[in-house]
Amino acid sequence: MIDHLSFSSIKTFLECPKKWYFKYIEKIPIPSNVYMELGKVLHSVFAKYLTDKKQKIHDILSEEISNEHTAFVFENSLKILSNQNVINFLEEIQPSAVEKQFEFSVYNTKIVGFIDCIDQFGTVIDFKITNKFDKESYWLQPLFYLKGCYENKIEINNKFSFVVIPRSSTEKLQVWSVSLSSGEFSRYFDFVLRAVLKDLEFYTKENNFPFTSHFSMCEMCPFNEICPNGKTVLETAEFFGKSVVNTLTEQG
Ligand code: SF4
Image (tube, rainbow, N blue to C red; front, side, top):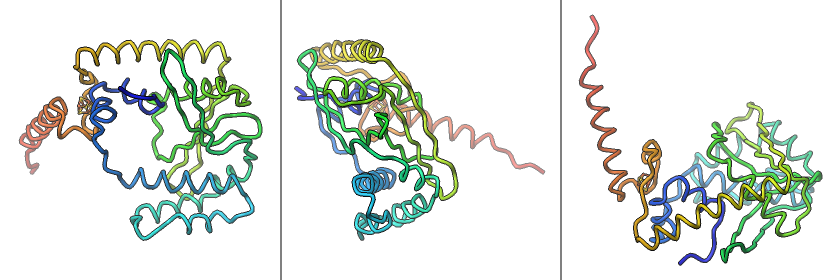
């Protein structure tokens, strides 16, 4: 049914099996948005710069940006690349690998991943371009990437860092790191994967992928217009919103 699992597909499945079904089985395309475009442009600029630091980072940006990009992407890329914190961080990295792919098989399932960068100390780095980093929603990523390196015999120091880059020219970037032994990340990864595969097999057999119980996610879900649950949640939110608006009274 599916030929591989990636970190983002497992993350989607854990968030909402129905969303996973829409995205990976029905393959309903998700329209791109300005935040996704900005992330794509900057990831590409960082990768090119880290691969060859003789190039000027702003020259790389000029090559990456085209007329198809919106003013939001253009302005925010410039803002971020004028942030000295970001530039200093990139200058200090002496990468041992950039945009490194890994692939391995476990329980007859192919697992694939794509690492932004591994620094000179062997730390696996993932760039996040955001003003608000929700670390709870990324708990699986270190396990997934450390396990991927281990299985592919990529030399690392068993440390994983999220490098959180704000859309600002002055705010400091943040680095959130975790170190895990190979025993720890292998055990946790194995546990998660087995649970996911078991549920996936069951839902597929039943041809019934359940909705998330975290309804707050439906508001931002790209499938909320076609998903019966999403529609209900949106209608309920609208109902409550209207009730609140109706209780507003004019003050003296
Ligand atoms: S709208 Fe909600 S329940 Fe429906 S797919 Fe999206 S997250 Fe899942």
